[in-house]
Amino acid sequence: MGLFGGDSVIGLDVGSSTTKAVRMQVVRGNWAVVGVAVAPTPRGAVAEGMVGDAKALQPALQALLSQSSVRGSEVVAAINYTAAVSVRQAPLPVMTPEALRKQIQTEPGQFGLSGDREMIADFDILGYSGEGQEAAMNTVVAAAPRAPVEARVAALEAAGLDALAMDIEPLALVRALIECRPGRAERKASSAILDMGAGHTDVTVVRGSDYRFTRPIPFGGEGITEVVRQAVQCEVEQAEALKMEIDLRWVLDGPGDAADTPAYRATAAIKSVLDDLLKEVNNSILYFHAQLPEEDLEGMVDTIILTGGTSKMTGLVEYMQAAFPQRIERAEFPGDYAYPINCGNGGLSAEMAPIVALAMGLAAKEPMDRARAAAARSRAKRVAKPRKAPAAAA
Image (cartoon, rainbow, N blue to C red):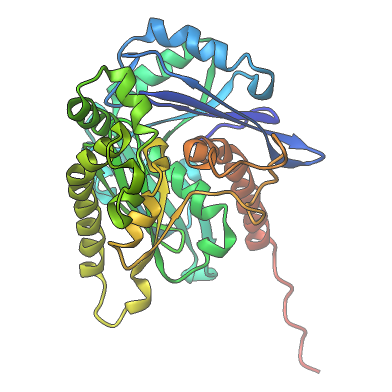
């Protein structure tokens, strides 16, 4: 999953509501985040993860990537996770990427794949462990329907862009929020990433940095907007603006002086649908816990990381913290991030981080793939190096 290109790459997250771009570049010999940009996606251009209007999307992409901070043409993009997408992470015997690719094509059943020609399968080698006969490589094998992948690539090419790779959204988020944060990647406990997008919400569970599963929930920010619209009897644009004034702390602590405001009516209106959504999130975590051995308490989910535009609702962290035993936090990119962030005032604001987290993970794919390839070559040289014969006994 990834081709060797130049010394600059753009992670491009094309959502149904907004499009986000993160540019990474080699700076003094090391990769760094050097630019971030966000722009509206034309209404109807992307719906339910599919490109619906490529002609409307083309000028929007060209305008976004003409901005100086993210100017470029080599991009890594993604498709969203659906029931038709398959992702498996498992240790495999050490082999070359070429051999693994051939084995996936000729023996798809060994990887839980159907071999259907309408599916596209690919893999990532995340790392190696052990030596000799115990050597193994930690591998993610993914398969996705051909139609949305090819439609997304065609839309990018029509905008004059070169798609270096197509990823799957949950894997890119794991890369950004777990793998690029050493403290999280090395933990024995599990984390849940709650990606609250415009059209859908995904719950992804990882243990340390090992992907376990994703559960898509077909409800997101657009559904909340519709509830607000009906509650206050307004147009969609007004409901979108009013949604930004919602404060879920009013549900916990009382509305105070806001009791008679449209913002409080909107907040009260979304409570039931939000509670239903969070119930599904909790059920997903409980399902994961049920798969763990009874004695494996340290493997339980202890943190829920919020990302996506809908996660920015004021008071959501506090509201969830009152309902969940896990620690609730929004996505952030602090000083221990794997790559320097040299944009804006030297970092990403708390406001921006949840919005661009997916694009951050997409941008990091190429640098991480190159680093792993270099490590694999170094390992191969070590293994191939002949050992000295033991000295003869005196």
